[in-house]
Length: 327
Image (tube, rainbow, N blue to C red; front, side, top):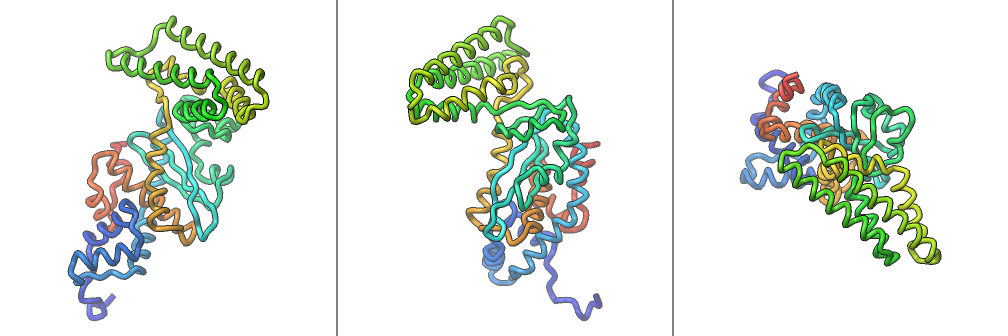
């Protein structure tokens, strides 16, 4: 562009980074981000809403290679957490998805929550039998085309036990919930002492009590078949029996997590975004947000300052996956 046609003031990478932080981390609506920037500069810098929208798209376009490279690191991890949540695109239910671990936050967005969108992500398909995948009882994970081993979130199981206790007033689910909590505490204490596992006797005792509580559960259910929560209770008992190893593998292996809290924390931001900023205008806009969050959160989880990372992005030189993980 000829110099005589350029605006007198060009917004620099510092302001651009600040705007991206407002829209992707603070979850400010684009018009509110524009108003805020104008306010703190006394009206000297007044980027319009359209400028910030284009900035969001331009930043995402500069991160497509980053997300591809990040996936190659993600699929080598021994434990991968994943979950998804509902977002809205033009008043229609859509899907925002998280994959990752303590140092990786990998996000995608889709118009539909289905197997096709999972195949489009092409993450679960690439995981090997050496990988443990933590989730909140997403039964799609048990598809025969996947090779990884599933581990189930015990926090969700405990919530279901509490719901059953509240609905049926039956004792077995309360006993099971307390048994899980006590064993997790014992495991944490053992880890703090530097121990790597429970003794075989402790493991056997844990499972003996599980057998006892499940037996009591069926007995209570059969003796009270017209109870308000009887149907849910049967489903819960059947699920625990069917996926018992997936729920309780952490008892035998202290390196495995007991909950999927990491995924839930990862998705909390987009839920706040929906409450504050509302729906997305298109699937592309939702995925742009996913791309930008992937970069921001992965940098943050590895000790990189968010504004610095965004400034580099706006200057056309984002941090690479190789820089972050030295691969």
